[in-house]
Amino acid sequence: MRNWFSHDCSYDCSCNDATAILGTIINGRKYESDSVTTEQYAEDMKKVASALDSMAKSQTETDANLKILAEKHASDISQIFKEITALHNTISDISKNISAIDERVKKLESAGPEIKITSFKASPVVALAGSEIDVKLTWAFNTQATSITVNGTAVSGTSYTANRVNSSRTFTLIATDKNGNTDTATAKIDFMNNIVYGSSSDTAPSSDMLAGLATKVLSEEISRTISVDTGAGAYIYYAYPKRLGKVKFYGGFEDPVTVLYTNAQGFAEEYTVYRSSNILTEEIEVQVTKEV
Image 1 (cartoon, rainbow, N blue to C red):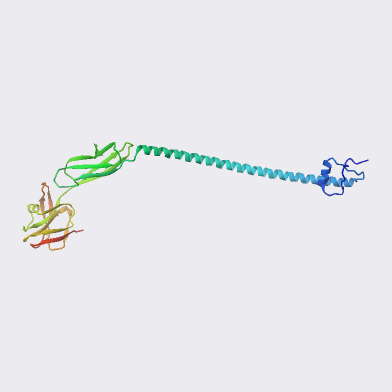
Image 2: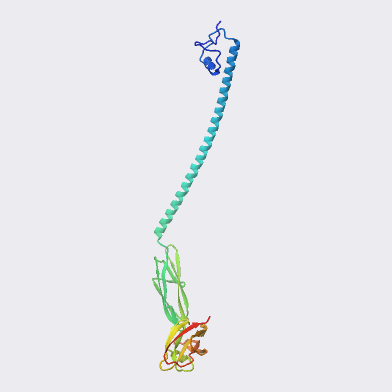
């Protein structure tokens, strides 16, 4: 009787290729020889079983690798998605910042420049002690002001006159623009007494003699170089407010004396008065230096 494993084409049963054996069986081929031994058949089946086991293991490894690959790609895709989301958020934030900047620029363009005081002056800036004068203040801005004050008093235009000023004073100008921006500047007038010097034949100084000296300088800087013409013969006198300190001369001068001097405005103040040691008969230049 024919074995049911017989096949239509010739098959070498001594073949060791288990895959070929399995392929022969799967394709419906049978053993053609009735003389196939049980041992040979069993050996073939062992090869087939081994081949199937190897295939199963290979499939398991393939499945595992596919799973690892799938998980890795899933992780990569998740990270990519997170990065895309973060980038989107960053772009959104930048867009918001650009919008805010645009709004600020539009406001600045419509508002114009912040107000700045470009000039603030007092005239005069010095006056003789004891006098009472009007001080004119003038100013300029880089843009229109909606509010202007001088020492807290509301003013307008480009000038203001402070009347009957009789002592040193600082004026504070505050300008405000339509957006509420402000700028501040100051100007000052100083009241002071004269430094007086010149020549006189008087041997002792007095207030009237000082009033008659040729040169009067409205200043509190007592260091200076003076030039005095003594004519046919006179002493050189140099006098200034006592409160300003002491000076020294490069030349022969007597020790100073103090005189109560009344200026042209009726203001009286103690003066330090220096007189040359000798009567001089020519134009003399004298260096005066404040002692420190």
